[in-house]
Length: 407
Image (tube, rainbow, N blue to C red; front, side):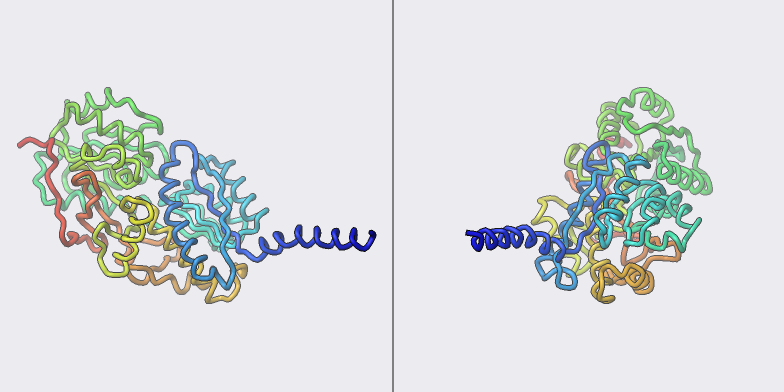
C-alpha cells in the first residue's frame, strides 16, 4: 500500500512540475497596452501588429528555440502610477525579455522602464520623452522610440499641407490641439512654419481630451472662414465628433487631423463621411498598394488576418518585435540585455522598406525605410498621397479636393 502511495505522490509531483518546466521554457515578453479608456482603440491597433509578429515567430520555432509568451498589462490613460505599476509587474516580477508598449506616455514611461535593462519599445512620438532620455542616456539606454517626435512629425505635416496640389483661397489657419506635450509640440511646429511662409494663425484652441461638443469653436471657425483647419488630438472620438459637427455647415477649409486619421476607429466610424480629410501616419508602410513585393505580402497578410487596412502602430510594432527577435538571435541570449541593446543600437534592422536605424537618442527618425505616410480618406479608406522623406507624391494616387469645398 505504501509503495502505491509513494508512486502516486511522485506522479502528482511530476504532473505539478511539468507545467512549470514548460512555462520556464518560454521567453516572456511584456505588452503594456491601453485596453480600456480613451486610448483603447489605439491600443488594439498596436496589439494587432505585435501579435502578428509573435505568432509568426512562434510558428517558425520561436526565438532561440523557445516560444514567446505574452504578458499584457492595461496601461489605461498612461497615468504615471499606472505606467510604473506596469514596469514593475512586467520587468520586476515577470522578468520579461523585452517590452512592446506602443504609445506609452510622454516621458513617464522612460523613467519607469529605465529602471530595468530589458529593451523597451515605445511610440510616444514626444520630444518630452526624448528630453527625459537625455537626462541620463546611459541609464535609459534600453529605451527605443519607434517614430519621430512631435516636432519632426509636425515638420512633415507642414511640408505635406503646404505642398498639396490645391490653391488655398486665403492664408488663414485654425489649429486645435490637446493639452499634452504631443499636441503642444505639433501646434508650435505648425504655427512657426506656417507663419514663416506668410500665413496667419487666426485661431488656436487647446482643448482637453473628452471634448465632444464643438459648437462654440465651430461658430468661431465659421466667422473666420480659414483655408486650413488642423486638429491634433490623439484620440478617435474627438476627431469623429468634430468632423460630424463641422460637416453640418462646412467652411471652404481643408481639414487635416494629423495622426488622428490613422487609428482604425476613425475611418470605421465615419466611412465615406470622412472623404477628403487628410492626415499622417509616422513610421508607416503605405497601403493598400505597398512600395515593393515584401511590403505587399505583409499588407496582404495583415488584411487577411484583420479584414481592414493598416492602422497606426500595427506595422511599426510588428517591426519592433522582429527587430528585437533578430537581435536576440544574433546575440544568442534573449536575457543578455546589454548585448541585445548594443546590437540594436549598432545594427538597426532590415525592415520591409530597407535598413532602419535609431539615432543617438534611440529615436527612429523619419527615414526612407520608415517614412511618414500622408493619407487622404477616399471612398471611406485611407489612400497614401505622399511619403516623406523626401516629400514625394505616392505613385498611383492623388489628392482630391474635398466635396464640401465650393468654388
